[in-house]
Image (cartoon, rainbow, N blue to C red; front, side):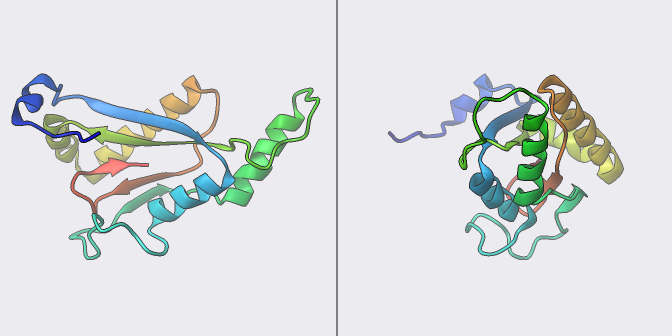
Length: 148
């Protein structure tokens, strides 16, 4: 299936909205996401190899081993009949993005305001999901600013 972006679609979208998407990742999936977030190793072609400003790491993402250990500790607090599977979800990974107008509003906050806004957003999501924040990186080397 091919999806085509049409100019008319922009008028139907909420350009002032922020967007959050999260998903559960196992240890390998999280390790891949962490490498992408921190720009470790080969990166996709859409990543600017020489950005005007570097990505900002607000909270250094935990390693897969650290998250797996934390997941096991939390699991041990519950009465579980079975051991944790090797492909069990250990992390909630996500992205925070912005509509066209929201990007301008986010940019107007400046670096300190952007960090404060993103920290507030991830802390709220973590509270709603009854978990903790294990990393926060703002990507400035792609087409639009966004955070993981």
